[in-house]
Amino acid sequence: MATVTAVTTTATGTVGAIETTTETTTIETTMTATTTRTSAIEIERPTLRREEFEGDLVPMPQDHQEKEAARHADELLAEVEAEKRAKGKKGKKKKKGGGAGGAGPSQETEEGAEAPSEAATAEAAKKAEEERMIRLLEKCHEERIRLGITAESQAAASAEVAKAARLDAEADEAEEEAEADKEEEEAAVAALAAAEVARAEARAARAEARAALRRADLALEGSETALEEAAAAAEARGAAAAASMARAVAARMAADAAQERP
Image 1 (spheres, rainbow, N blue to C red):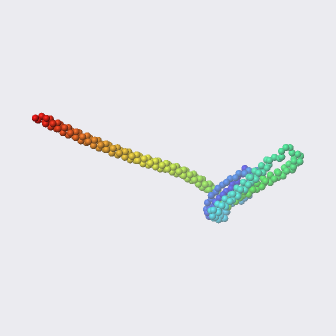
Image 2: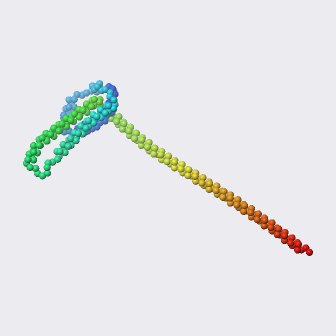
Image 3: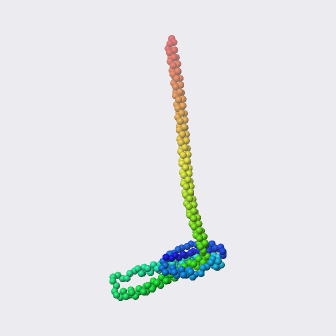
């Protein structure tokens, strides 16, 4: 099992000051006999120091660098995916059996003749796959050199990515807290509005009670006035009756006096 690392890097700055942002995609593929050859190529490849390629770095626009790095990474990933699909198809073809039923002598002869060719094809495919994987490794190495990627820059980029992830998580947490505070504020505003409505209703009920009390006071005053008027009328009638009685007594006395005269 071998690991091919496709690196997408953005490099900005001048000689001696290179800022990198690295995104690493790891693709695993099965390799049987490539370890020895890959190791040999890695040994034969000359070791390049950072000073040897820093002079060739030319500041490029940020967008162009990002597009170029993304294009190289996409090409590498596409090649590896194509190899995996091709290998999967070959494996499926090998697993498929012959026709149903017993085969005749002619078919056995044909299978015996085809067996060496299939083995040679498989060996050629294996070698081709090894060559492609080696080329991919070389391309990755060339990309690392071209973009000035070092262990220090990768560590710094990883630290920046981790920091960005941490800041993003903190921002999400702050947004959640802000949303919770906003919900609490909205609930408080709704409660305040409900309290205002209840207070308005209480004021309306109190005004109605005052109006009813005023009407009751007016009714009481009216009844008291009617009672006073009735009492005055009764007194007037009593006085009239007393006057009539006095006149009747006077008339009676006058009549009696008239009868007593000779």
